[in-house]
Image 1 (cartoon, rainbow, N blue to C red):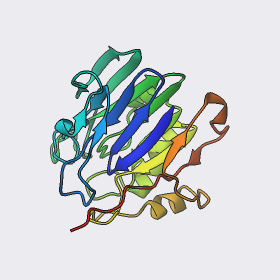
Image 2 (cartoon, one colour):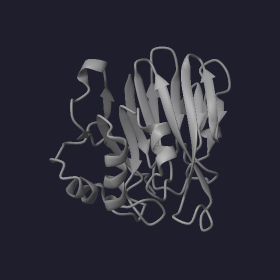
Image 3 (cartoon, rainbow, N blue to C red):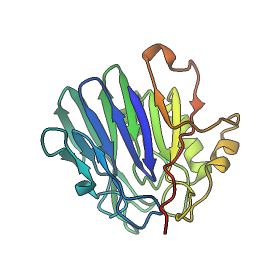
Image 4 (cartoon, rainbow, N blue to C red):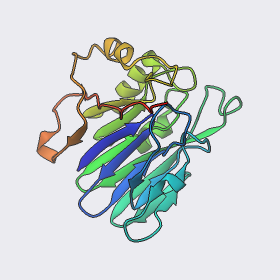
Length: 217
């Protein structure tokens, strides 16, 4: 499986038979216009920075959209949407959020969307089998670095990939703060990850992915 970070909370997960695009963004994020193909598009919550599904085209047909809690089977991928919130007051401030667990090829990948709180026991039970965790770390409108470390300890994934943090055009906390809080060693960002089951680390590690070049004005 290949994992490419397209910026903000948007990733492309490319398996052998199906490609998933998460939280596609619109203009206003500081990134270049999003142009990507996929078979499935997941949307964690309704916001232009996360639900610009029209920016994703399908190779043969219009991509399937998943945008809420439930279980889905599409193109050989098993997808579980888990109800969460964008704040610590059960959505009273910023509304609901869906975390997704994707079972693709031999991997389980969890995308937490705009999670705004640490997880309760029911949510942990639904997401705890994730090999790879895509987690917001930038604070302000999601969990911050300290809370993100707690969520990592709750789910115990093999690989952690930070998202939704400060890049040109987005005023959020940096990924470096999260890495310091997790006591993770410095790593050089890479454009994408190509993973096999045997390449997963034995203990939790952080992988930084390179964002696309900032949009030229």
